Image 1 (tube, rainbow, N blue to C red):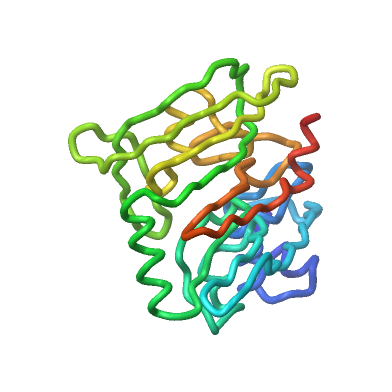
Image 2 (cartoon, rainbow, N blue to C red):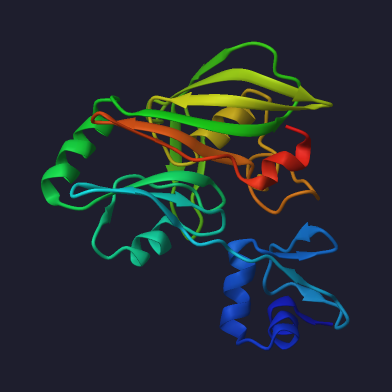
Length: 245
């Protein structure tokens, strides 16, 4: 038996640090299941599969704003580093893909942040969840977050901050549903926590949702964002078609 990251490093011909990083990003699987613990003990003949991470693609750029299509498995700070001429306006969870905004000057950044604070930004997501969703549902429950090495959020009616999520049914395939989601706030892990609370956990979400052998990511995608007269869209990634949607 040997630690997973050491076996992966040997198999791929990379450093131990790089092997840990790949496991932490969620791109390493063993027999179709995402490897979660880099220091876990595994058999020395274990075969790992490493998924390639796509590049962040520029959707739009002008003098004020830079918009990218963020791939799953990159965190927001990593995307920001790729575009040193701009600073983040919003963040997406590491395994969430789609529209992400960066400001190219301070004046625009201040205007945009004010729009977010006043709930004037339209944010539309798509997700694949466990369960048959046939009716629109509004989840208006406050959320609190404990931030450490890994953030953890929960419904907290006493100390939480306001959070509102509206769910619209789209398609049903077997016991899974594709849904449209509109959020008015942007609390850490808001959609994932709200959907778990409402009994429709997101497929592939190992922290709040339901594991799947078909994908190695959270099936949540930022599809449409409207801000200050702009509208940006990102096509759903190919993983969404694994489920027949």
